[in-house]
Amino acid sequence: MTWLHRRLFDLYQGGGRHARRARYAMAVFDALVVLYFLISTALPAGAWLHAADMAIAGLLVLDLLARLIASRDRAAFAANLMTWLDVLVVASLIAPMFLSNLAFVRVVRMLRILRSYYVIRELRETSAWFRRHEEVVQSSVNLIVFVFVITALVYVIEVEDNPAISSYLDALYFTVATLTTTGFGDITMADPLGRLVSVLIMVFGVALFLRLVQTIFRPPKIRHACATCGLERHDPDAVHCKHCGATLRIPTDGDWA
Image 1 (cartoon, rainbow, N blue to C red):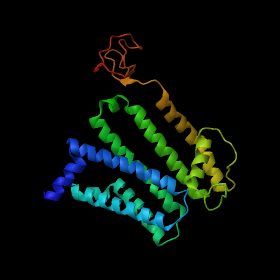
Image 2 (cartoon, rainbow, N blue to C red):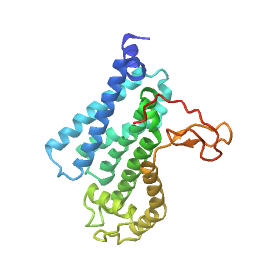
Image 3 (cartoon, rainbow, N blue to C red):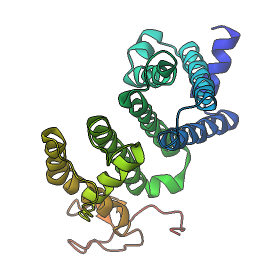
Image 4 (cartoon, one colour):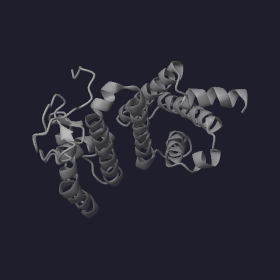
């Protein structure tokens, strides 16, 4: 193991305090990159925007190379889906320099939001607060990813044919209005494919959207199997099982705030 490999392995996979802080900093960077991608869809193309894209692409390439060097199994790293998603994101940042800025090129950048699942894995190992509220946090992340993926689909399909959808934010507005069943009607789908997507969002998307929202806002529960009846979900301060009345012995640190 070379010095560089050892240092990068400790940084990306080590359990030390500095390594964890570095990974949290990377998570913040990922969030800022996704925010930039969202804002940039509404901005006109210009030299400064291309320069920002190239700068971000350079940082993402360095991150990819560092993770490749740090990996113990480089073949598995190269075959990992997240690796290829990051490659697509980098390609989407470079492509407009050589091609017209197609809608799909911009939307591919939203794949970066999927890296949030790596942050969840990190928090599960380090944060007691996160472990107590993991279901709510995971549902929130799933909701965000779901909304942005559906928005990307709407944007790619409609941006060339629907004058009401000229940016990613327009597609996001339509998606949220449809998923929440608000249906303002100021943006509608006129073509057959767009209407089919609208039907799929209303039939499948609304049910999943409401399920995720319900998980986020319902009262918090803790997982602890009742020794008598096996019921697993209880209130954090429960003393007796609501199903069978047996006494529960839920491990606690005394702080559920």
